[in-house]
Image (spheres, rainbow, N blue to C red):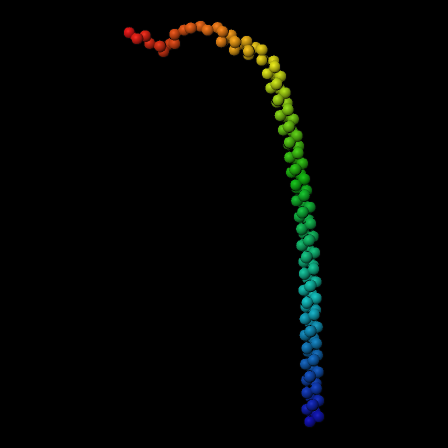
Length: 118
């Protein structure tokens, strides 16, 4: 009977060691999963920062060129306005004279399509 109780004790001890090994394996697995999650998060953050930096560089290049375009358009607009204003002042007098001559010098003529009623 003592050998039987000794065998049971050995089985209980083996069961306890197996249970401890399972708990230890679960802890290692949980620790490894946590570590993998932290590594993935760090990698994602690094990738995100890299892509944001590239985006900001592209945005700066595009916006910088848009700023140059705005300045060029503003300059061209100002130049066009100045040209139109100077042309207006230069030709205003002669155009007024032409318009007034057309209004004052009326030459009554019969229209070529007019038919005399016979």
